[in-house]
Length: 71
Image (tube, rainbow, N blue to C red; front, side, top):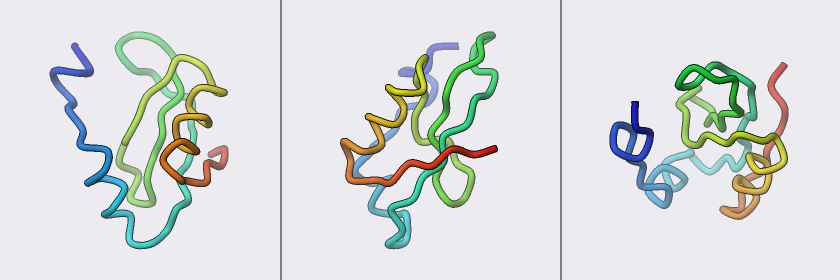
C-alpha cells in the first residue's frame, strides 16, 4: 500500500471540516505492517500517519490543532 497514492488527503479541507474543534487524537496502530502513530479527527477518521509520536504531535500542531493521546 502506498499511503500517498492510496490515501491522498487535502489537509486544508480535512481540517476545515473538523466542525470548529481543533482537538485531534494520536494513537498507535498497525499501518502498512508496522505500528505507527495515527492522527485521528473527532470522527475517528485518520488524517495523518507518522513513525514517531513526537512527529505526529508536531504535525498536528503545525496545522493549529491540539493533539491529545488516545488510550
